[in-house]
Amino acid sequence: MECTNTQLNMQTVIPCTLTQWLQVYNVRAVHLVAGFLGLSVNQSQECRSITLCTPCGAVVRTVSITPATKVAEICLDTEQLFLEGTYEIPLESTSLVWTHVIHGGQLTVMTSIFEGIVDTVLKGHTKRVSSVSWHPDGTKLASGSTDCTVRIWDMTLDSSECIAICRGHTDCVNTVQWNPSGTKLASGTDDRTIRIWDIVTWKCLRIPQDHTRFVLSIGWHPSGKWIASGSYDSYDKTIRIWELMAGGTKCLHVLKGHTDAIWSVHWNPSGTQLASGSWDKTIRIWDIDSLAGKCIHVLQGHTNSVLDVQWNPTGTLLASASLAHTIRIWDTTTWNCTTILKGHTSVVNSISWNYSGTRLASVSGKTVHVYNTDSWKCLHVLQCASTGYSVEWHPRGTYLASGLTDGQIQIWK
Image (cartoon, rainbow, N blue to C red; front, side, top):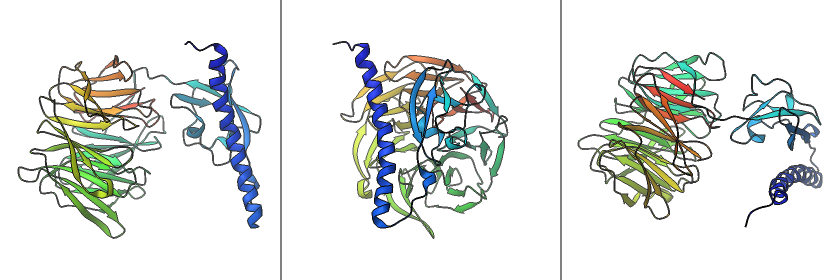
């Protein structure tokens, strides 16, 4: 049965109305409870009502904010906010809305559509950029390179300049990743170590080092308490689970089963399972609930090595990239392969889901492909300046970073 316009309007109005009512209700409830307890409440925390409008003045929705409300909290994934009448520079996602609009005022909301054009090129690495990782708030980008360094880029500036270079690794940096809260950065390298970096001084805090050969992949647990790492060695084809403690790190588990190098490890969103992709052409799913470390599934089907595995944001799908030029999509309920993407003509080195799970990006050869995850239609084929090795979506899905073999990083929008 088709929905009428009235039904569609109600589907839009009711959630927005409920959202605003709950925001006001929650604030009043806090004041009421504080009153019963005899506590004072900072009145500056009261809500301020503002309106989001299109450039032509049509009301999109009305929202309630507090002095602590950030732009990202009132925007949808594809939206950007602008000051009224100023549409050149959007408000930063971390900016406080309270400082930009008075009670009853308005901001302009515009949809940001990924067009697949180069926005910025970051230069500084002298060799291949093996890994790129956006900070959770989208303001910084970390990159690891075979030049043995990790670079930190400030992405809030028009020039997107390098603000720090983390030195200490003595061999190629294969992987970098921020922890979920953005308070630490981890890197894994061919020098057999993982380094955890302080994000204020950019000095190394600790060095877990039980692997006997290259550390090819790392993955932070959603809680931020543990790190999984995958290694390559003719004897040590293992995954290790590390616990981060105040005084250092502790290896909790050594997961064995793969018969060759582990190129990628990735936790599911709930942190109960870990996926690993290997040079042995298989994907293993490990039950890490209570950190038991038991392999519960072995996914087979790839005809060559698996170089990357990534869960979608809801954990319902797993994507895997292969040396055989293909990407497979696995249903995590049945563990059946539901889709095989064959558009690439070279090794697929890296894949990344956007924040909402509606797009999947992949890099292979000198191209980046962007797929619609509903139809699995390829929406964009982006031409890189050199061979691409790593790719990752911005947390808000409006930008895409790709690391290249010539040391450059291309930022697409």
